[in-house]
Length: 266
Image 1 (cartoon, helix red, strand yellow):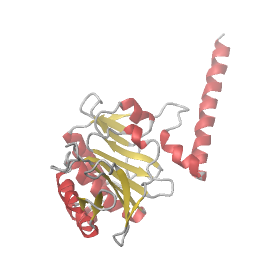
Image 2: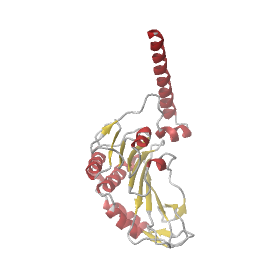
Image 3: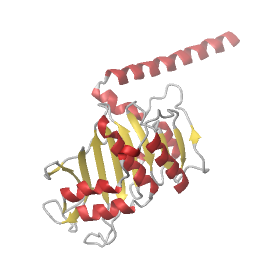
Image 4: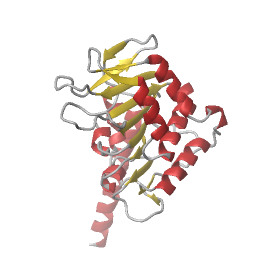
């Protein structure tokens, strides 16, 4: 898998940046394939979990808001760390396990402790990464072989970000494989309006601003084009284009039926 780390150095000149860690331990500045939609759906100041299926069927797992204790910059501000894994279909069990483990512990204590050893201050970019420590990081995850692969329930759901529901989502990740359709599958974050998550068509989302303590099913409004399709449209993926065309035709057909019905009534 491709692994990316975002952090900053102690000094003023070393601001936040993304680095890609190669299999040989090499490090280079490079952004992970995070689309335009994800940043608008997460609270960057709280621990967040995001899972997205990309249009080339790769999977992106993003963890943000990691705060190792004692890691501060020159102004004594907390230095945060974000991680991104990008894997192929064969890597889905590991990514599901990573996401489930992060959901069980809101503060990601095992991940943060291991990450604090893998990412050190210093170097050409203000921070540097130890590849052996990064490889050991996945040992905090439960054995992917223990996962089962039942088909998922495709109806999107949203709920309040509380411990019980995070555990339920973690269990769903261990039990069911992920939906096959490209799009943002999971967003677990802090203060984010539920309307934004619903409009983006996120498969499973948890936010502190959702009322109630149970899952709520929802469906996109007729004619609405979810933000999930933006990357697919730009890539000219034929399947995404077909789904867009069907969505547009359905919307206009519904509008035409409504118009004819109103004319008949008059």
